Amino acid sequence: AQSVTQLDSQVPVFEEAPVELRCNYSSSVSVYLFWYVQYPNQGLQLLLKYLSGSTLVKGINGFEAEFNKSQTSFHLRKPSVHISDTAEYFCAVSVEYGGSQGNLIFGKGTKLSVKP
Amino acid sequence: KAGVTQTPRYLIKTRGQQVTLSCSPISGHRSVSWYQQTPGQGLQFLFEYFSETQRNKGNFPGRFSGRQFSNSRSEMNVSTLELGDSALYLCASSFGQAWDGYTFGSGTRLTVV
Image (cartoon, rainbow over all chains, first blue to last red; front, side, top):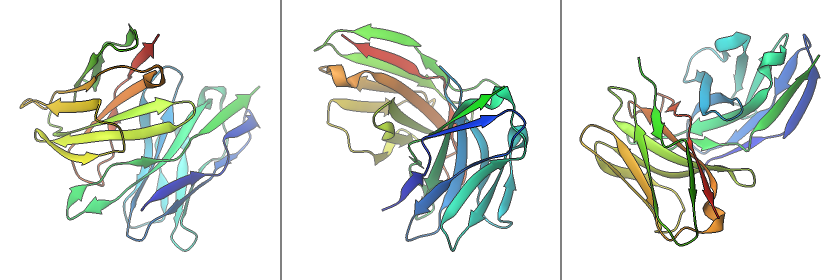
């Protein structure tokens, strides 16, 4: 079975500082990896996804993530955060079953709080 | 293009009642998935429909059910509501492949009193 672990439930950071949100997954098969962001009282918005190829993936709003197969990690980074990045971030994994889509399995989320 | 639309946005029901939530996916998307989000359990997968057929199902009791229509619109129904069913219910749509990723709606906030 697949699972996703987000190592930090809350990450406080000052504005313009760099941030890394950590995500580890477990799976016995190849997976597709995603990061989503959720702003208060809203649904989830896709930040970026890793399907194959280059292990460094760039997404929206200046975020990027690096896939590390040996460490089964997919950490999200941003070199300089803004107040508007305050939100909850979810890492997710998807597995393909015989050509069709398996459900997305989410981590518990990391609340990023950017302070002025 | 229009996003995923969920109605209603907010709902208050009493224990024992039933409720139906609606989701209209992005045009062209054939897969609709439903998630329950609570502070304690996080995002939990309910079920996924693809071309009117339930393709995947999470670990929820039979009180939770869903269906998908020929235009890909989906409904989920919860019967005999319990206090613990209070949650944000999120619908997401995609083309149906594992690598697609989902587009989420804003959710329906259900409060059971």
